[in-house]
Length: 485
Image 1 (cartoon, rainbow, N blue to C red):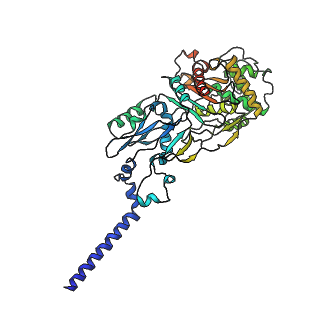
Image 2 (cartoon, rainbow, N blue to C red):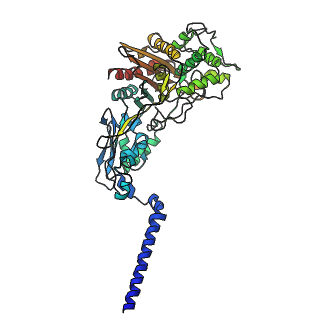
């Protein structure tokens, strides 16, 4: 009898050892396979078992969480969803996350290690911290002014604070409501299919993810390069520029949209946006100096993040002299995001310095204690301070006496530059209307805001489309909102 008991005990011990070996095999050798298996929903269920942290604008949340009572319990909600979609992005149970919802996902969902009270604490307790909050730099008045200014027209607006790089507005139209994608049912799937099939691409963040030919707004960069290089010394002297201008090495003749451009001074050419003068000026400055100046403003940088990725703005460095002439007036292969052109205007306003743009002021725990702050931002020089001073004169002349008078604000000092960019096969597309600008209140010591506006489908006769008539009023509304806040 005793022998049978010993055999049974040994057999049970062997079973226990086999069980422990198998458990170790599963938990150690195959843990990653099971964790990443699509059939394993434990992490997904845990992720949505608590409310998500919020994204804040001017201290108020523009996001929230709704208790659905379902297996995936909490679903994301949005206040003024279409207005802030280019900032927040979406957080979907079905389609993942984008923009701030993506780059700050660890903090918002509570999984970021920095939120844990003790190192490795959550690994032992299997608990999850409350989601933290993301405080943005957005000015709600500027954001709304930009959104309402565009109305139903396709386009984008970016506004920054020149002295810091803080992004004050980031608007893209047409937009969408991120709340439609929050769940995992038929509503989310139908909205996803509809938004992706829309030819107007409402989920494309035009302010930072699309590049456009900047047209005549790029003449600010060309002027900066020419002034820094000493190619231009007298803004009011004749430039010996023909009208039309034959592109070097070709029979192609470049013309102007305004009169009086033949042999115009740089000041006159800037105020009235003479293509021939600036094309010739770009050729005289040379591709290397043009490249260096463009890159000092931020062109050709593939690593701009705010914190989500910004599309690279480009200045082609492989051009011949004819292509350089076109590149110097913002055509050919020159491309820019609205945020990049807002940085160009900001550099002029801040004495030639470019400050890295940023969208997140600070992050906090659920209780309000600070996790991280933006801190001081990298600064680089785009041009000499004296060059920036002369460009401010030129940009003020555009608003006071030239093509940008619709951007003028009573009691404020405003500088701007208009642009009408051709595109499409044989320039057959509706021209893009551009305006970049900066503004300083009458009692202020420095500019408070720099803005870039692009309108893709200006509702006007093709010959009447212009940055001054279409985009400048939108920029003015944004600048007024910031100056009055």
